[in-house]
Length: 49
Image 1 (spheres, rainbow, N blue to C red):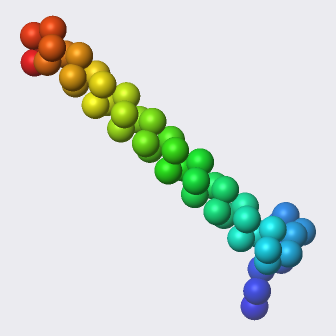
Image 2 (cartoon, one colour):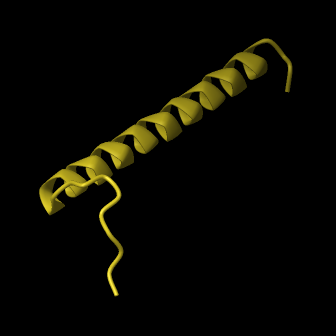
């Protein structure tokens, strides 16, 4: 038995929403990784690690 579509949208809109959500998640992970890398570089440069 299939579940009803909670957003009342077609398959194209659902696919677009999933793609957009994935891109936002990847951008967030990239931002966190970049921030972590910059922090490590700055700590090493200033003798913190």
